[in-house]
Length: 213
Image (cartoon, rainbow, N blue to C red; front, side, top):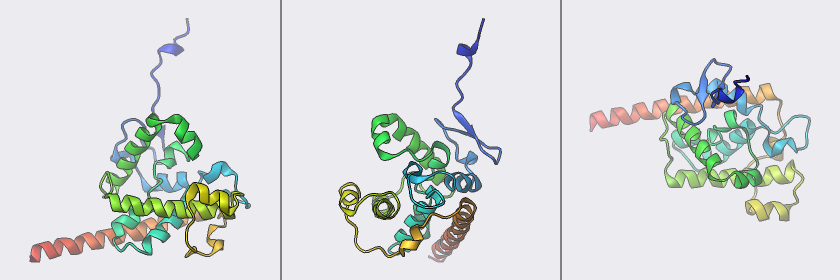
């Protein structure tokens, strides 16, 4: 008699680092930046329906969003949050928005738990302050508009209907040109290291100021 039906369901993902991340109850201790960078550099935005010799990856999108946020945000913690804003997608992929709406609340719950674990792993609050979330979301939509028009075949009117009409881009159109996986992964890791160091320096300065006070 087959016992397949009695086997426990696997709800964890094994990472190349050796970590096993529970999707329903993720622990920050099982989150590694190398796994995030590796995964996001290999996850295609727009389900891969973009122009160019390479997929436009979530890692490249995340770098662009962080660049946009950094223009108005001086706190390195929130710039780091911008870089990691799609962190859960290294394990659950980039589900396109129309399908997310079909999946409903269960998908969003899993996504939020994973995002909280990513934040806590790197010293960020599980839930970001509302103004920070708003700024990151605006940058995300800004990037989505230009990705849609430059890469995904949307005309400007159609893209504006879904993502809003942004002002002139502070980025060169070439910044949206899809980059090879290995190069994007390396760029993501480098930017993370820079921001992580900035956060540590900033927190050390705050600690010294508190002691003096």
